[in-house]
Every structure is written in structure tokens, then in C-alpha cells.
Image (cartoon, rainbow, N blue to C red):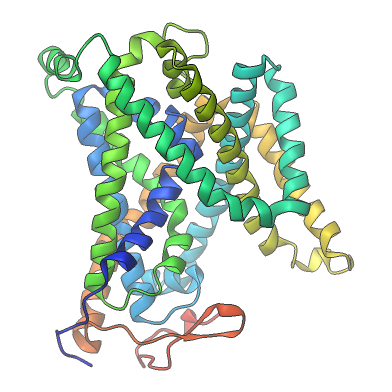
Length: 411
């Protein structure tokens, strides 16, 4: 058990785990171009460095989280953060606060993005559009969440293919080459933008850590430290290439979409309209709208499943009614937030959540987490204990449990 030789993780397994983070990052919010425009495009050449550093921080953090989770046979993110913060176990509530706020921001961004797309395509008033999208998300959450979740993978693939096609076409059709743009920026600003680039990289990695509960659940098949590392290096490559391509394209078209009223809200769509590729624009717009609605539905559904079991709702015997009440509350709050607009949600809502995410997730995992993982693996071996499938297909905790595990790991 304590030997250094471990089984080689199959590429397809590592790729599938890495692709989960890619899909979560490069979904509806990323495909709009708003996040890339807010945090990286305006920094010029330093924005490219910032994006690469952000993806490196994110994937390294996820790697340490998966190693800690799998090596100890943990069963929830609550246990994970209790282990990370031990002996200050109650600090795990910091992640809970970050997670709940970030989920509301994500739902608000999804509703706002979908409403902005409706406003751009059908000239529907933005306030009316967010009400319509909110009502649709509520109905799907109550009656059609299963269908949306099943279709979300295909919608995600479609939006990624069309978005990357737009990036490639946009870079080729730009009047100015990206190398000339970056060279001119380097000559004009030098290294003056690097401090802000570092802050933006930390912020971006911080709010993307909202995907951590999903990643540790999907990463349970990985059986050793090297497997976790392999999956996250694959994810780093995928995420970095896609993000950098989007930044290149947006930098080449920045003067165009910034000159259009509201053009920076969904800059990828604005640039696509200017290019005059009608078929690609239509496909992209439809996929973007569906993907944003899917993001809202799936996020709210997971939130609802957790909160409808509170004692407050014990007197309501009907599960659909409990679900409707919780979902309606979340949607009303999210709609209220979405009134400030997608750009403000990304800049301020995601921004402040990013600061919190850096403090409670990124820095702890890349410092204390690295130390605890190395110490644990030295004494228990590189290979993680096997998990058994519990009822309902959920991974049960491994039978081999260290006597040094803090009692607070158990719910």
C-alpha cells in the first residue's frame, strides 16, 4: 500500500474528468465573451499572461482538492473543507457562504445573459426579457429539469464548437493582426499592466472555484495523485487554449464592439454580427440562449434539492410545491440581481466573490492543502483506497480510514 508504484490512469478517464472543468468554465457565461472582456482583453498582452496564470491556479487548486478528497475517501465538500481547515473545522462555513452567493450570481448572470440575447435578437425590452426568462427557468426547474440536464451536454458542445469557430474566423478576418496589436501594446505600456493582471488572474480563478463540488464528485474514479494531476493538466491545456483564443479574437475586434451601444454585453455575438456570417450568428445565438437557460435551470435545481429539505418546509407534503416555493424564491432574488445588467454582475458580483474564493479556496489549497496532502500520502501511499458504490450510485466512503482523520470529517 505504501509503495510508490501506481497504476497508470487511462487517458480517456483523465480526459473525461478534465473536460468537466472545461465544460463548466467554457459554458454560457464564458461563451458570451463578457468574462474575457472584463478581466483580460483590456490588459493587452498582459491579459494573455493573466488568463494563463488564472487557469494554472484554478487547475492546481482542483488537483489538490481531488487528491485530498479521494485519498481520504470523503463523501462531501463539507468534509473536504473540514479536513482542509482542521483544527479550525467551523471555517468550512466560509466556503458555504462563498458557494451560495456565487450560485446566485451564476443564476443571475445566466438570466441576464439570456435576456440580453433576447433583447439583441428580438428587440424585447430587457426588463421584460428577464421576467420571461425567469418564468421559463422556473417552469423548467419544476417540470422539465431532467430534460434540460440531459440536453445540457449537447448544448454545451454546440456552443463550444460555434464559439471556437467564431474565434478562428474572427482572428482571420480582423484587419489588424493580433501580433501587431500585442506588439503595439507592449511598446506603449510595457510591464505597467502586470500588477492588475495578477489581481485579475487571482480573481478569475477565485470565482471559478464555484465548480469545486462538481469536480471532486466527478473526480472520484481517479485512483492516485498522478491521475489527478494528469486530468488537471489536460484541463489546463483545454481551458487555456479556448480562453486565449477568445481573448485574441476580442482584442482584434475590441474597437468594433466597444463602439456599438451595448456591444460589450455579449461581445462575441456583436463581433459575429459585424462579420456578417448570418448562419453562424443564428446558430451561435440559439445555442447561447439555450445554454444560458440550461445553466440557470441546472444550478437552481441543485440549490433547490438542498434547501427544500429544511424544517421550514416539513409541513408541505407535495414535493413539486416545495420545489416551486424554493425555486421561485431563488429566481426572484436572481432576477433582482440581474436588473443591474450582465456586465455589472460579472465585474462586481463575480469580482467580489473572486476575492472571497481566493481567500477561502485557492490560497488554502495551494498552501495548507499541499502540505497536508504530501504528509498524508507519505504515510498512506500513493494509491487511493477503493470506493464502494452506495445506494443510488453514490460513492460510499472507503473502508480504509486513517485513525488520524479528525472527527469533524463526519457529518
